[in-house]
Amino acid sequence: MKNKLWKALNGLVCAYKPVDLSVAALKRQIVRRICADGNEVVGSPRLPLIKLPIVEPHEKTGALVVNIRCFIAVFALNDECEKIPEILAHSWVNVYRLDGILGRETDKHNIKGRVISKVDYDHVTRHKLQKLIARIQSEYRKLSFKAAEVDLQSEDAFELARKGTPRVQLPEMQIVYDCSVKHFSPPFFSLQVQCVGETDLFLRCFIHEIGANLGTTASCSRLRRCSIGPFQSSHTLLEKQISLQNIIRNIELCRRILGSLPKDEGVVCENSSPYEETRDVVDGLNLHVDDEYDAMRPVWPRNYT
Image 1 (cartoon, rainbow, N blue to C red):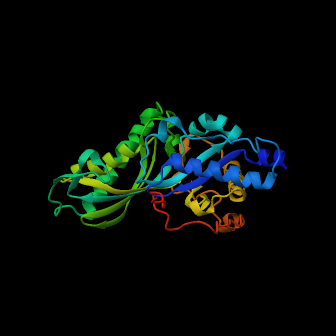
Image 2 (image 1 turned 45 degrees about the vertical axis):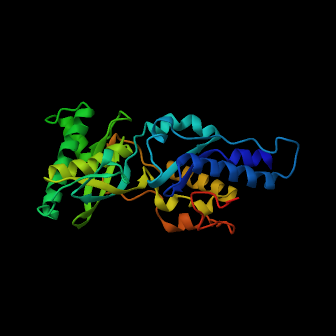
Image 3 (image 1 turned 90 degrees about the vertical axis):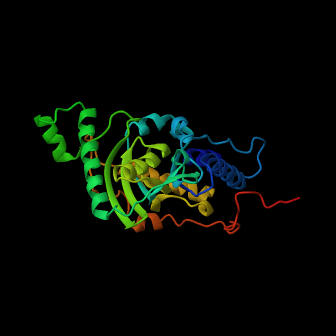
C-alpha cells in the first residue's frame, strides 16, 4: 500500500488560493493533509511513517504574488518537480479578471494602497475605453511577431497569422494577447485579459496606464486569475476539498488534461474552447468535502489564551 500511495503522489495538483492565504500557507496545508491522511492509510509502521512529499513552488513567480490576490495555483509533487522548467517553457496563456476604479491612484498601484491622487473621469466612456484597448492589442500583436523574429511583410508572418498569434519563446516576456471590457459603470470597470509572463505589478500598472491614456488615472481594486494554461477554475481543489483522496484524483485529472493538449504549433489559438471542460469529467472525481472544515476560519488563530 505504501508503494502504491507513493507512486500515486506524482504529478500536478491544481488548487484554488483564496484571498488572504499565501501560496506558502496553501502549500503547507497540502503537505500536512497528505501526511496526515497518508499515515492513516498506511497504518503505524516504524518511523518514519511516510516520506514527506516534495511540493515545490516556482522560485521566481512565487514571490511575485500577494495574499490579497485570489487565483488558480498549480503545484508539482515529487518527481514532477523535475519537469517544472519543461512546463514553464510552454509559456501558457493565463486569463485574468481585473477590476479597476477610474479617477483614483494608489501608492505604488497597490490594491489596498493609500490613495495619493484623485482625477476627474466624467469624460471617459465605454467607447473610448474599447478603442484604447483595441489599439493596445494591435501594439502587442506587432510585438509578438517581433519577438518571434518574423518580418511582418513576409509569407512566414502570414502563415503564423493564419494559425494564430505567435507564442512567446522567452518565458519572462510580458505579452497581452487579448483584452475585452466585461463591465463598465464609471468609476468601476472590469477587464478580461489573456497574457503571458505577467506579474502582479505588471497587471496593476496595466490598469493605471489605461487610466492615464484616457486622460485620467485608475487603480486596480481586484485581481483574479481565472485559468492558467489548460487548467480552468473547474479543475481546482477548494480549500475545504484538500484531502489525500481528492489530491490523488486531482493529479489524475491534471495528467489527463496534459495528455489531451493539442500539438504545439508555436501559436496561441484565440477563442478556443477549454480542454477537458465537460462537467462529467470533473464531476466524475466525486470530490469529498472535509466535515471539519471551518468556513468561518479567520486569518488569525482562534486561540486567545
